[in-house]
Image (cartoon, one colour):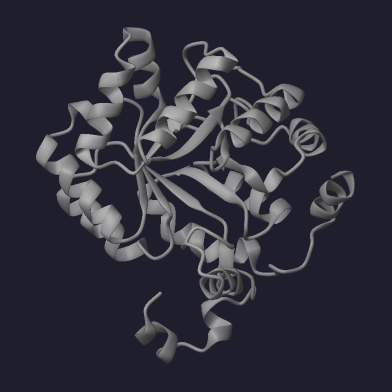
Length: 288
């Protein structure tokens, strides 16, 4: 958020919740990067052109943290456009990474070294390690995380299968997350695809399976290290109400990024009373 904006608008209208700005300012004072001390927002880019990408950065560049070039679209994009996106994102201090499905394809095609060479040549500064479509054993998953780190990349991982009807095993998620984080991953993303329907913690209507969410909170030692793919508004609202403004949310459509930021700050009706714990959130915290 630029200084002119801060001068014009009273602080109470920039962040009525008192949560979003406070976290970012505390991180800044401690010398931490922009992703520390606040909930991260990851945008999925499924084929934005140069102008659309510029509009994304102009409108919400201050409020997002990571851009994922969705699934396997990176090698099919025009190289000049992809280089432009990577450069502009990095100038904004953002992470930008290819989708995890592309690394899965590299594993399947046995071209992992070539994948890392291409990623580094293009200038990506992050990767996603996932096994939503293939199977990765623990040793290979750890090796991919460490290879990313050796190449100077930030690494996020993803848990869950993309097949419709796939559910989250809370105990397995907890075990996987612990090992991923120990290997050096920044955080672990809970799979929901770009649709948010019929996968992970969301049912065939896109509604949250609350019993599954409660189970995850019981098993995972630090839910704040999870990022939840939540492309639909009502999913974002629920997760914000439960975990607060600091929850990490991913697979956000570019056109919804600014609206999500208003909800994080209590500037939309859905989270107008932000800062007060809902009964459901209290119940989750009690179980944790």
